[in-house]
Image 1 (spheres, rainbow, N blue to C red):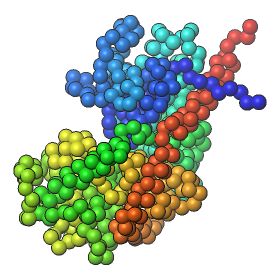
Image 2 (image 1 turned 90 degrees about the vertical axis):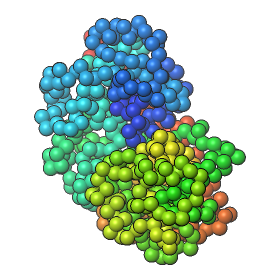
Image 3 (image 1 turned 120 degrees about the vertical axis):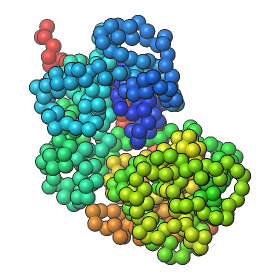
Image 4 (image 1 turned 60 degrees about the vertical axis):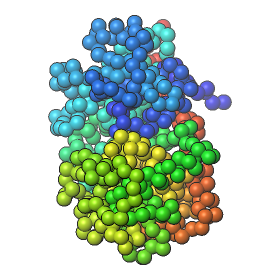
Length: 558
């Protein structure tokens, strides 16, 4: 007979991306907040950085009455807080902490981390100090709330820290609040990402890399140190996919206790006629912007393919996508094709000439200057996407069957050109391509299939590995997700496979397209948070058991 699972009585969840949208971790937290809140109600507190102090934050609603007695006590002890609700489904409780006062104690904080856990902060640079001061401040918030509110009332309390930016706080909790169970999730190892991003082969030689030595070579020693020490000292060390679990074992010298796969909520996906209307509106906007930029009139039969995500040219497979587009264009596509590269870059401003055209309801027949770019960049001559388009003479001429538009901005609904949120444009695409070389999970392909947009990814992405596991063999385009085998050296084969997938899908009849889109949505349904949240419960159970054993071992014998 197995022991009954331990359920947390209170959970703190700390991340730099709480109410602060930066990347994939924001999506992880903001989408599982609803499932966690349904499980915990207001026995759940997210802790994020108050980087919006003095500015309006559309993601956060402050509530001056929330936990007012505790907030007064916390502020009396030197913590500067704003409390309220995160404006995401579930509307969980949030504490945003001003971490800047702790810079004055930075040396003492780093000295304690070295003495207690061997964290090496001597080689810190860039964002290490900022992240560490927030991490420390977040832990102090949790500690303070525990001392004033929870201690003596809740014996099962979890502190869950995400990514290296909150690792220092997890270690602080382990030292100063040993009764609190600690969970640390790395979403990508610092050294693994750096190896891949610096053009070194990661996968063939993963077994041979020494994480400490590589951190010195790649100048990420302090980030690796705090990440590694957190992995070794927390009660439950976790990551987001099997592919990253391999990295952790080799580069952090610690196997993961749990794999917490990233799910998604589909509540905001429109249904029925509303879905059709939203898709039609997205395509109308895409084609209007494309016409104003290129002077070409796009029919609704145009095949719209996209890639998106963080601007990591090699890691995210942007280089492969561009090469695949070039090869696809050389095959004389039967359908007019529009490719959108939606990757935030060093954007200067939305194009005034394009805005002026869009302000008038008119169809244009002449192209603007630089008809491949929706927003001006600070560094257009040096930008990698722009350079590829120039070198391969991709310039959106009237006779070109493939048109390519680089959209180098965050699609937040206020970019000045499309003025639609990312999801409201994604629904209008026909296919999405994410041929990643380094992708611990891969929210972009999951987001695509949620909106019934079939996609291409690779066997090196966590999502691609999961899709293959669900099918029991390699997933193909007919399943809604094509998972292309990728390794350190098969760039050309991957580019050809992406071009093949585009050509194959563009040639499908309406009945086949409908079936593939349905299968994409069916796969997405298997990745909902109501299925994946159980892995979090398993991690909490393990952490709570280890914490209770630690407390029992240090309790005086009666």
